[in-house]
Image (cartoon, rainbow, N blue to C red; front, top):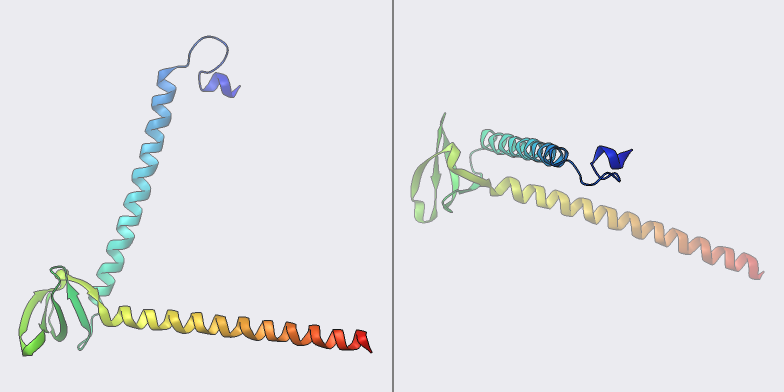
Length: 138
């Protein structure tokens, strides 16, 4: 039955229309998934720009590093080295380095906590093994 659906039965050759339809469906699915991921990424970037605070360290799309000094409706004034102040648009902010450092520190703390819990479980297992060996030997 599947052979007939894809044109591969015993009758001599498959239908090119079925193959074009399958390829078309796969292309549509690929486009849909790509657009969804792009929208999600844009939403995260906009949320990051909306949550900027004074004293956050940022990096612009052009690679300028600075600290947010003043937040205006659609622009920011950032301070770079040697007390140079620049006015940039919110859309030119690429990364909030302060937020990124906080997230990395939280991930590191969670990783350490998991490692400590794992080590505690291993110690408990080893203690139970030693105890059962002693009980068996007695």
